[in-house]
Amino acid sequence: MTKEIMESAAERSSSQQVLNMAVSSFETLSALLGLTAYIEPALRARSAAAKLPAFTLDQVSEHCWVDDCWVVLYDRVYDVTRFLDVHPAGADILLESAGRDATSAFRGVGHSQQAVDALLQYQVGVLVDAECMWPASK
Ligand code: HEM
Image (cartoon, rainbow, N blue to C red; front, side):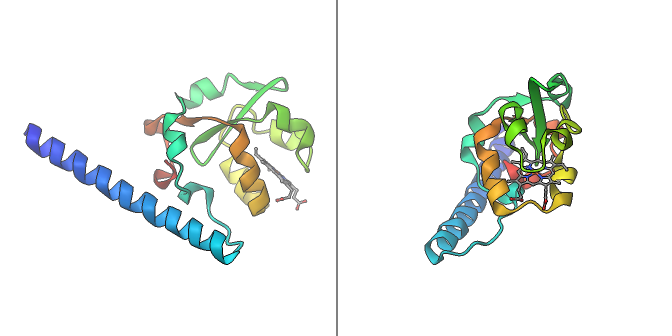
């Protein structure tokens, strides 16, 4: 039984490695070719994200203030407090999603790759596995 569990864990970890390699090869190739392909944030290989703390949606909801504003995008947690004043569409639209999952609002606008890249600097964590909706995002 223990052996089966270990084998299944090893299989899962090696398929994750293959997936990460495929995504990062695609990103490297795109960079080399100078392509500006829009890479869905949920599909990005983010090994660094694994080291960030995990929060529940309940914990995120405590940060719903103008001076302490977190949002969830693609199962990742962002502290956008210092971004409120520089968001091109203003602070109010972001504050509507303060402390919540803002993925569909973010997608609905059709943000550019530049906007997606801007996200990186604000990430403070990930959602706990049980509350993730985007399985490929870790
Ligand atoms: C931290 C998360 C966000 C970042 C980094 C971000 C970044 C940006 C950037 C860079 C732009 C300029 C246009 C572009 O490059 O796409 C933009 C525009 C905009 N954003 Fe956000 N945004 C965020 C979250 C949101 C959310 C949650 C909403 C809610 C609906 C939103 C609504 C808009 C709107 C309406 C525009 C104007 C689009 C236009 O005029 O074409 N943003 N955002």
